[in-house]
Length: 452
Image (cartoon, rainbow, N blue to C red):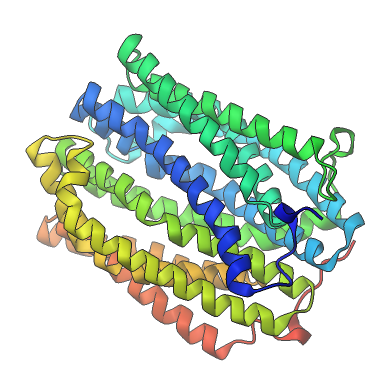
């Protein structure tokens, strides 16, 4: 096999995980950059009101797309297990089933996203002053849903077999395209915020197309054959069994974040813009967490598929430690330089102040966020996504919504919105630790093997 797709079932653990995670980290960096470019250009060229319109859309977008991302992560676990077990015949069926699912889901997401956008924005108490721009941004964004879904599907397959380099290359290309088109549409053509959404969609078309070409032209065992794209009922069941909890988890947590956003909206445009600017900064802080948690899921999936149980445990210890340490170091940087980071999006004094307050409440607790996501990634790779779903729903959804429902009417303070995240990160970390220490997640007798 080529080096880019060498299994993670052999070799030095820290090297395998690090060299797998680094391209993901760089790729996520470019992904975050081209998402952030929208806000930077909108905030600087169109003003605080337009920035608020774009910022308030993030939770809604993730609520609808996060479900399918969770399903694709389940597909990645199945593919990683089969790749680790060297079951090529079943691996091929799993890949083509995954692509078939993505095509159907992408079309449905387009219809649902465009249709539901105005209703959910209204439910979120989006101010009338930003409603038209928020709606136009969302509907253009969701018109490109098929390409977003298929990109996630293709990247999930490539990463599951240990190929994290090509997605990085394609993200670099799409990031440059997005930057150029943002400037052309907003600055030159004066399109408004919908131009930022269109630039993102077009760039995603390119990245999805490049991934598609890579999968159809490769000579590796994971090659995609267009004529073979079809559903295998048994494998589809396995994918849904593992991916459904993650997808449901993503959507419900995003729903809770929509509730959080609606509380932010009640404090006005400046709060929305400042909170949105911070969210973009936090997105960068999340990158090392995301890269190593993805590496953990793939590493655990492949090694359990190959029955390398002790190796899986050692990889978990290394990946979790690195994610936690990196996240906290970045948290310190965000805490110190929050004024400069927020002002880059919008120098308005009120906007910057709201963003700083949020940053300096949450940043030093990034270690807890990293830890919770790391253990959830391990359980997902072990086929126990239901457990992580229950824990995260309990604390990141029920506790968050309950906390805000009780405290906001009493205090009328946006500080309650700021503190709800560190609080729920801490509670979920405690719950994950208790389960992880008591469970036999890596027990050979309890590992479910994927068969054709």
